[in-house]
Image (cartoon, rainbow over all chains, first blue to last red; front, side):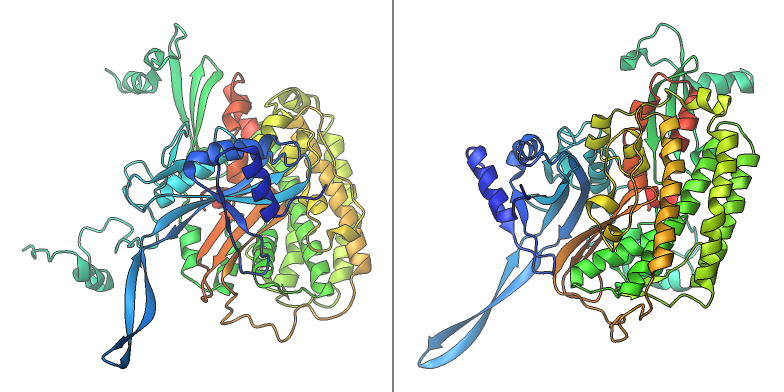
Length: 210
Length: 388
C-alpha cells in the first residue's frame, strides 16, 4: 500500500481518534505536501497513533525544528459609501504571533514518509509551550531541547528540558526573529570605534572615567 | 588541605542524595572539552563507580555559532560555502544536501553529467571519511600513530583529487542549485580511475593488519551494543543504524539523484557493537569503490549546470521543503521555509552527528571509562556539525 496523502491521513487520524481535530496546512512550494497541525493537547495521542498504526508505522521522527512567526499587521481595505461618495478605508488588524514546532516523520519499517506534524503555541510569551513527543520518539530528546534553547518553546512532558547549545545562565532565545545581537560578543570593558557607535544607539550613556 | 587533596575532594561527589546509592564514593569526571578522544570540543560528564560508567551526560555548544541564524541573514547561495563548515570532513555531501533541498523547494532540474559528478564526489567523500574514522577509532583504542597515519596517507590521495576539481581540499563550495560550479578538469577521470583501482590494495593491507587483530576484537566486540529497536526510535542513522542490522540506506530508500542506476549492496551488522560499526565502514568502502567504478565508466558528456540558471537574486516561491541525503555520518537533512524573499525565512540543518549521540549514555552504561572513549569514537561525530 502506498503512503496515504495528507488529506487521507487526516481522515484516518480523525476516524481513529475520537474528538481529535487535524488541520491541513497547505504548502504552495514545489513539493506541495501539506502538513498536519494538531492541538498540543492531542499531540501525544496523534503521535502514538501514527507510530503504532500498522498502515503507517512512522517509527522514526527524523527532524524536529521550530519556526517563529512574530506578530504582524494584516491590512484589509473596505469600501464604504459616505454621503454618496465612495471612500476606501484601510483597517489594520494585529495578528498575534506564534511559535510553531515541526516534526518530520518517516517509517524505517515500511520505507515511506514523510508525514509532517505541526504544533503551535498559544502566544510568543516567556512560558509558551507545546506537548513533548520525546516519550513517543526518543530522537526528539536533543532536538526539542534545541528548540527550547533557541526559540524558547517549552515542552510539557520532556524528561530533561535544559539548554543544549547556549550556556545555562543565558537568558535570550537567539533564533527568534526579534532577537537583538549583542554589540560585543566577547566581553569588552571599554567599547570603542564602531562597537561604541552601535552601543550608543541603545545603551544608556556611560560616564567617562578619568 | 593540600592542593591535590582539595582537588580530589572537589571532584569526589557522593551521589546518594540523588538516588544513586552505592555505598562507596563515586567519582564525577568531566571528560573534555579539551580531551583528545572527544574529537573536538565536546564534554562528557561521567559518573564512575570504580572504573564503571554509571551515568553519562553529553554537554554541547562549545563550537556553537548559530549557523542557522547566519544562514537566515544571507541569500540562498550565500550559505553554500558555509555548509562546508558543518561537517568539515565531508563538505561535498553537505553541499549536495543543501542543493538538494533548494532544488526541491524551487523545482530545479539537474543535468545528467552534474548528477554523475555529484555521485562521484559524494562517494569520494565517503571513502576518505570512512577511512579516517577507522584510523581515529584505532587511535582511540591506543594504537597511537600508525593506523591513523596510514588512513591519512590514503585520505591525502582523495583530497588531491578533490583539490584539482574544486580548488580546495576541505572547504570545497562546489555544488550549485541545479548543478555544479565547474566541469571536471582534463585528465581527472583517469586520475580518479587510478585511485579507485589501487584503493583495494590499501584496504586489504589495512584489513590484514587490523580486522583480525586480537586486541581490536577484544576491545570492540560486545562493547557498546545498540539494539535495533532503540536505534530506530532514537533516530540513529547511517553506518551506526546499519551496524545494528536495520536495512536503511537513503541511497536505496529515497534513491535521490541517480543512485537507482548503480549496483551496490548495503552491508548490515548482526550485533550492533563497536566492532560491527568498524566493519560496516570497511565494507561500505568496498561498495563505494564499486559505485565509483560504475560512475566513472558511465559518465556522459554535457553541461554541468543549466547555463541560464539564475543563481544570484534567487527567490523561490513561498513554501517549505525538506531534502535529505545519506551523508557518511548518517541522514543529513535541510529544512527550508521560504517567504518569497531572497533569504530563507527558516533554514534548519538536521545534524546526524548530534542525533546519533542521543543514545550515547545507553551504550556506555556498565562499560569501563576506557570503553566509553572507544564507543564515542565509533559514533563518528564532527563537532562542527554537532554544535553548528
